[in-house]
Length: 206
Image (cartoon, rainbow, N blue to C red):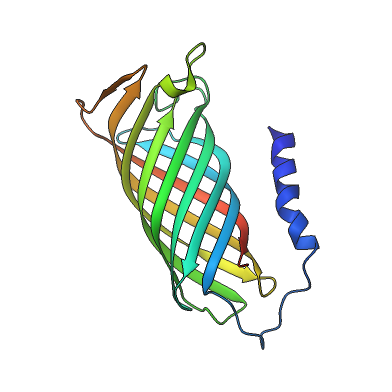
């Protein structure tokens, strides 16, 4: 796992080495148009009335479009491997997957600056997928549901087309569906969940 993480960090760092030095404050920032943002992130999951929090790490990809200097819309796909530790909140002693999908808007606070703080809000879908031996991946048990994501962070502009982004996204919602082995049900008490995703990634505007 450590070697994989180092390889991913190296992959993110490679484009930075090929870029010129950071732009000067006199040049105009770009926040309009299409952008692509891959990132590495640390994730945590907690459930209602649970004393413990499960955590892990993963990869994410955000695609978006800036309508003007201030407002952009985006869609994000992220997936993490979660280590439940000794007392996992799902009653598991093996790693499981945590997938997230966000559709939302991002608001730049200082769009003309080399360091641009931002806030974002979005609708969220989350699924916890349990990998069971000798079971087809499509039939793996999973809890899924939706909620609302609120996030914030800053983009550090490296050039006219490339930036470095650090962000924290917090999601609250409910698991309201269970699927597994061709069986699906919503006939159970909804389970409140919360996730936190702290990420570091690149923002590329072609």
